[in-house]
Amino acid sequence: MIQNVAVIGAGTMGNGIAHVFAQNGFKVNLIDVNPAQIEKAIQTISKNFDRQIAKGTATEDQKKTALANIQSRSDFAAGVKDCQLVIEAATENQELKLKIFKQLEEHAPETAILATNTSSISITKIAAITSRPQLVIGMHFMNPVPVMKLVEIINGYATNKEITNTIVELSKKLGKVPCVVNDYPGFIANRILMPMINEAIYSLYEGVAGVEEIDLVMKLGMAHPMGPLQLADFIGLDVCLSILEVLHQGFGNPKYAPCPLLVNMVTAGRLGVKTGEGFYSYAVTGSKELVVSESLRKG
Ligand SMILES: NC(=O)c1ccc[n+]([C@@H]2O[C@H](COP(=O)([O-])OP(=O)(O)OC[C@H]3O[C@@H](n4cnc5c(N)ncnc54)[C@H](O)[C@@H]3O)[C@@H](O)[C@H]2O)c1
Image (cartoon, rainbow, N blue to C red; front, side):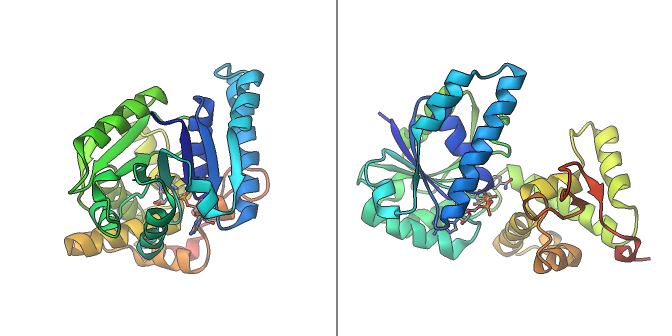
């Protein structure tokens, strides 16, 4: 039975994952190499609870209990040692994830389920670095985690069926809707979403339309709740670039090649909401404001 959960990585996703587990009565160890990130994550969780309280979807008592369920940990070994489930939500980088799963083999209990929130990296490859690939699975939450219903569950080549069933049932306990898919680059969510975002960036790069026009067409024309460029800002442009690179390499198909404008923006450190600036500026008031200038347009 799963009671203690370790979440590795306290960034955009890690704080949301810790939030939903803690809200549903699980004990959570929130681990990050950067202690400042953990502190920031706890503040974000607290703020997000306040938002839920204002909407009437959570109470002050639930917030208090949930925050008490979360332990900040900068010591990896101590953080994972008593957990029945580990969810890795560290930076989207294959080498880093392989390193973390190697460490998990050393420090996590032998029977612990080892899940990754990766957006695109092969579950089979991550599993193969361990000697317990049957316990490794993809548990792909969507951003923002407390709000989004879907959990895309990804079976690696060797994932045991019982482990899949456990994660399906667990996702339901968190109030989420699980959907099980197989392990190919980008799975389903990002295989379909990222080419759309990349195409939106290409449309901007080629001067077909501006940021607001592109987002407006997709919002009003396709009934998307937000446009693809704003969505990219929320996901993080570095995350989008990493996923496109995985799709590009994994399928060997040039249609997934990341747009040079995306590469430039990531190189310049314009990563979207988390750095205060991407296709929009979020810096001063938290409200969005256009920053992409005419000079970025070609043609
Ligand atoms: N951002 C999204 O919308 C989104 C959606 C679904 C899945 N994901 C996936 O979730 C994962 C995390 O993405 P994110 O957007 O939260 O990234 P992020 O950059 O916001 O946070 C990553 C965190 O990992 C920490 N970290 C790095 N190395 C570590 C290590 N060795 N041990 C512990 N912590 C470490 C960093 O300090 C940082 O706090 C990625 O695999 C990403 O693909 C992201």
